Image 1 (cartoon, rainbow over the protein chains, first blue to last red):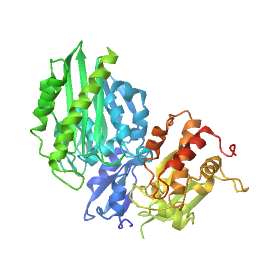
Image 2 (spheres, rainbow over the protein chains, first blue to last red):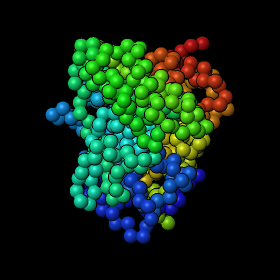
Image 3 (cartoon, each protein chain N blue to C red):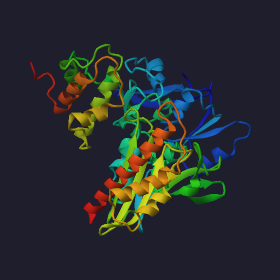
Image 4 (cartoon, chains in turn orange, blue):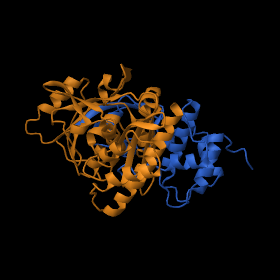
Length: 292
Length: 166
């Protein structure tokens, strides 16, 4: 199992990377290599045979986590393990801190990047679901300069994003969670570290006992992460109890149409999505209460 | 052939080598440097047999390219024991607990557990309970032992009690 021949470029600036992505001549597909935890296996299995690899690991200013005016910016090359240990992430994006331990295994998180996972857009992966849940802004740079893409517009299909072929994801911006906010990420996978059959990201902001705002996104049940808008609406302004949770989960699950595969049937995925919505919202609300 | 010159420090020894850019780090270690203790099981990041330490952290050597190791420091299982006939304390702890059977997964487990001990030294969080240890070891697959003895060995390695029990 060895990768097919490709041309390898290792730019030291985003501009150089964009040039390497846009001047493709007749070289075939060009792929950005960040942590490589998905791309290198695809190369080895020859499921991907790009003509050129643009390794962005040598670009210096993409590995920072900063918080300014209530917005956390995570550079695309920040390793998942580093983000998971970061005080800023733990304090201001508790949902991401809750999701990261569920990604693969320690050695994978040490190498895998936040930006890479989002740009790869596996519908069962945790970080795209976190981005969808929190309305992250994905910052992309291309030959025409920089633009910001809302998560709702970013994940356009199965492993497909709004990034053009000559654009690179440079950062993820997420609004910092305020006081009274709690978050939880729950998933069901066949084995620990596997991609989940279904997962639920939930962030709840409480005002006293009532839900001021609920954000919920589901992984593994469609071609891209799904925002559970009906559940969010069903929870807003309510006090969380079993009946309210049933109402929220049932409203969302009825709309889901996951596919069946060897890991689980469509009906089973819908069932676990409902169970996980209840569990994640309950845990997020309990954590929110602890901050009040 | 599409090659590049890289300089890597492997087990304390600096080497400058010309590598084909599509070479994975695992193949580079095994085929080019002859360090065959790093094993390759699945070759796509699932089994953990190829785990090595890169710049102080555990990483899979099958899911990165050798060219990406340029300028970095790598420790493989060959780099643990000092060569005076003594095992490294992590190896001794695992030996004391009869942690392994066929030995195929051993190098990956040893490096993963060594990584935990290095994390402990550096003040980074490490697993405390047996449940947490199992979770940390979940990225390494063993088909012989049922893991019980590996968890025992990991506890001993983290506690630093290797060779102290009769």
